[in-house]
Structures are given as C-alpha cells and as structure tokens.
Amino acid sequence: MINVMHLLTSFHVGGAESVALNLARATDRARFRTMACSLSGDGPMRPLFEEQGIETRCITAPANPFTRHVALAKRLARQLRADDVRVLHCHADLPAIYGPVAARMTGVRAVVFTQHSYLARSARDLGLFLQRTVSPLISHYVAISRGVLDNATQAGLMKQDRATVIYNGVDLNRFKSDLATRENGGPVEIVCVARLSPEKRHADLLDAMRMLVDRKLPVRLTLIGDGALRSDLEARTRSLGIAGHVRFLGTRADVADLLPGFDIFVLSSDFEGLPLSILEAMACRLPVVATDVGSVCEAVEDGRTGLLAPALAPEKLADALERLARDAPLRAAMGAAGRTRAERVFALDVVVREHENLYETLVREGDARK
Image (spheres, rainbow, N blue to C red):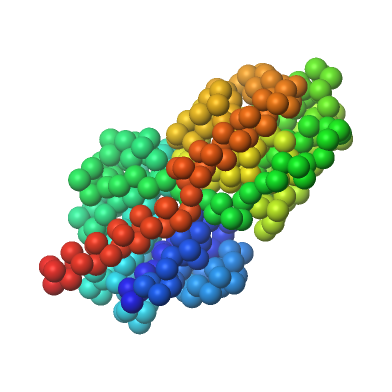
C-alpha cells in the first residue's frame, strides 16, 4: 500500500482542488491510501473529499510573520511523518514551495508537482524564485497541457527531463447526456460554469448576450459559479436590459446533473490553463464556444467540437454563439464530436492510471536510492 497525499493551498472551490478530488476518489484503493491536506485551514470542498472516503488534513501557519513560514513547514513535516506519506502530490504555488521542503525533512520517497495553469507573473516574482530554489527537491513534474509545459519550462519552473504532460480528466460516467432528454422549443440555453472573477471576463459575455438579444435571437444565459464580482455582474445585467435573459445560480454541487439541460457551453476568459469545465461540457455533448487562450485549443477543436473566438472581443463571441444558436444540427454534430474527443483523450480512468503508474515508478526509484 502506497500512502499518497494531495497537498492543496486550500479546500476552497477551484480548478486545482477539483482535479485533486477527481484523482483522489478514482485512485485504486487496493494499492493506494489517498489523503488530501490544505495549507490554509478548512473550506467548502473538504466535505466533498470526505464524502468520497478520502481522509483530509488541515494545517495552518501561526500569525507571527517572523516564524510562520518555518512553522508551517515543520507542521507539514509532522503530518507527513504521522501519515507515513510516500508520495506527496503538490498542487499550485504554496504547496510547491512548502511541500518539497517538508518532504525532505521527513524522507518522503517522491514529490510530484502539477502545474495547473500558465504563469501570469513576472519572472522576478518571489514565489517563482522560491519554486525554482526548491526545484531539485521535486521528483517529477506534471503539466496539464503541452502549452502549460512549454510555458513553465521557459520560465525555468520545470525541467523537461523530469516532466510529463497528463491532461485533466473527466468522469465520463458522471458527465453524460441523453440528447433525447433536451426539450425542443423555448430559448436556446447557454451555460457558463466559472468563478465570478476578473479573468473569466463575464462582463464580455454579458455584452455578447446584449448583442444576441438585439439580433432577435431567443437565448438565455445561465451562470453557474460565485465570486467577488457577483453583485457587479448582476448590476451590469440590469443596466444592459437583459435581466430577463440571464440567470445567476451561484455555486452548485450538481453541475453534472444540470449540464445536460443546456444547448451550448461558453467560456469568455482572458486567462486559462486547460479548463475542467470545458471537458465536462464536452462529455455532456455540449458544443463549446470559448476564447482562444491558454490551452483551450488543446481541448476544443475549432469548427469540429466547438468554436473559438479571440479574448476581449464580445462581438466575436456573440458571432460564434449566434452561429450555434441558429443551427441545431450543427450543435448536435459538434456536441457528438466533443463527447468522442472526451472519451479518447480526457477520460478520467486513463488519467488516473497514468498518475498511478507515475507514483509507483517514483516510489521504486526512491526506494532504490535509499
């Protein structure tokens, strides 16, 4: 039995946390004991891990700014020792700094770091400097797309000879769609699943919706997700005069059940890695309209499984949405192609097997060196 701990910045809702949850719950429990640990206390995703039978841990640093960093590393080291962790899988920046240090203190056999997004910061950023500093302590890197790997390598954050691209995976049994259940008639239902945060550019999406309404298209947009911008976006919806065409559902735990009721999935971000929400939409046979940023193009095949539009261009986004809204057969064809691509490239069971093989290989190599 190999004890694996997924180390997270927090248990708040986010892409890295969702990826870790998917991996943890699908890992073979006959071969692996899987845990999840947060470096900033409790959060709304902790119960989701525990509902899947995954043990959770919360570590917090003391308030004293002069001792907090060393104390956090020591507390994490004690937890790793208590759980007899053999593979520490770090997700995001803080875990990538504290995790390798604590692992070295306790003799953890393997440290894996997954880079979930493109780097948006200056190469002189202190966090990147610290990550480069601890790089020799990381056994292997995982990048969630080819673009992310190239970006991180160019920034000196990853070493190509210790890196593997493993795409995010989607549970095809949870995210599926029976096309016959979709109602005919009524507005074309468009959905966006994303945090209400600046990089998601919901304001551009609302502007595009105003254009679609002006073009006399029967459309309705549903926003699933919450965040600091919610009140601003609700006010913008009213000021644009499209409140009757937009719904805010907030954070939902039943996204897999909701998605099959929509016709088009849309994402209007100006910054992304490889969004899990797009993969889930494809698994539900939804055609995707998305901005061509990050590694979105590695998921969405433009003109085949969906349509790509430039970021920060609401009119282009509206044009792509209009094309699909007016053409039901095209929506069905692109949705079917998306499901096929999800099955071939992004199936969770394939992604989990790749991680399991990586863990076992690294443990064997660590044992051989000891």
